[in-house]
Image (cartoon, rainbow, N blue to C red; front, side, top):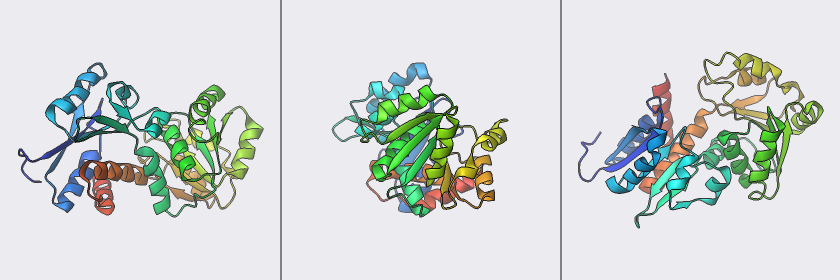
Length: 291
């Protein structure tokens, strides 16, 4: 890496905790590949000091930062402007410090997912999407895929009211294409699976170390998915989740969550630097950090 000096572009990530973040490896690899004088720093930001941290972006002249848990929603209160899609999703993962001093909040998770699926050659035009979960990842998936041209999006959550709240929030922004179901709507859920061309697992239930990961996968009615359906799990640790393993055993094509992580980072990198992000370099650095 280039020695940090007065010309260094300063970037970072706010989280609590943040030491687990793989983003520094991705961004430093990209900067090195392009010969950019850039430093990307992980900042552990106590939720009680989030406003101070955002003001520090202005005071210290950072070009931008990523925002991860638990700050993605609360950070919007401290910004000058929030992109409409990020506002609809209800979460910001990228701050951009514009040349006029404006702090703008964006969400690169939604387009990052779309790009990762396009890269994997998953058909998205007029897709019939079923999203599991009603949190921030699910909201980003719904907005990204609806914007990309999905014919319909069905959201299934453990509690029907969670899915209904998501649909109520997002439908005004995406032409009313979201339909909400609860897990207890058994027949309606099975019918939705039977129509699905793309299943998006957007909960944390399949994360490595979750004791209920296998039970979660086993409870899903994957046998009702059409043979041509694709399955993506937004979790990237492990690379093959319990849901992906079960879907693969049925002969369904699966996509892991690593691509979304890479592409959301690449979009932020380009936004900050004005340079086309070297996606392959960023992916290799991320994979090496996970090895």
